[in-house]
Length: 136
Image (tube, rainbow, N blue to C red; front, side, top):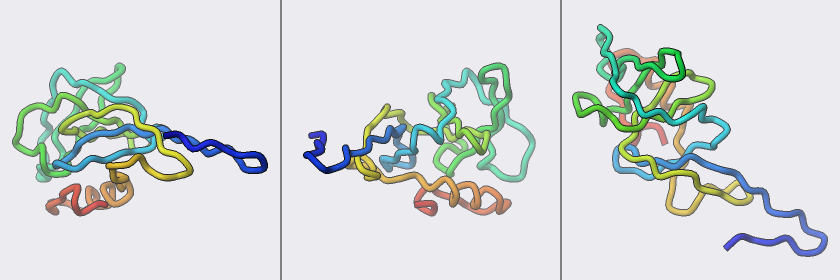
């Protein structure tokens, strides 16, 4: 149920979130932090010592790096990747849930907020095992 404002109260704020499943967890990112959701035809592997860096794929006429939390390392090609706006890379997800709405700065019920900052910091440490469980 959507909360309503009564006389003298401010209307509740609504915020949209991109919802997805990653490593078995139901996560969300604020929609303004997501550039797009991609369905890569193929991810081209690049030589690297870090298995979390899966490779690159072509999206909107640009190469986008696909990086993993660990679940997609040595697994099948992901069907969806969430492309982050500022970081410029994509996170392969297990399942794309869709758009969800939160009210008054609360995330949608049944979801956790994906911690972009911790995920990005973990990627900066070379050859360090990383899981989405480490970044929430």
